[in-house]
Length: 64
Image 1: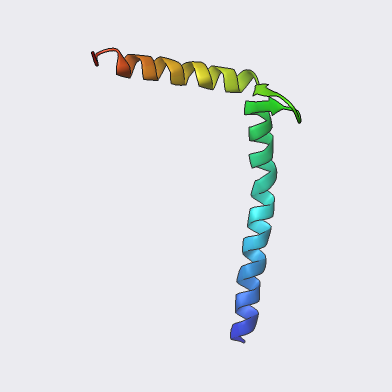
Image 2 (image 1 turned 120 degrees about the vertical axis):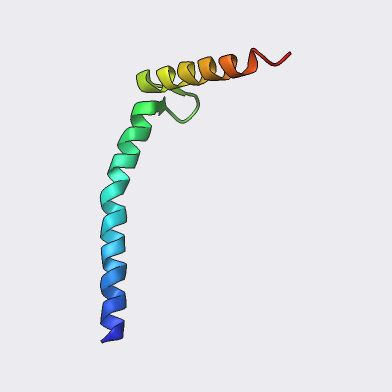
């Protein structure tokens, strides 16, 4: 009986991971668009990079 419960939990975990992976891949494709030799940031990725650069600039400006 205990072995059947362990397999059920493993199956549930596997189904959960497999259902989340397409969302992760779709998000990464929206943020980062690249091919084999050179890659670049997509439209969403560029805005994230610009936001990060602004935050780092604001944080580092008061430091002499």
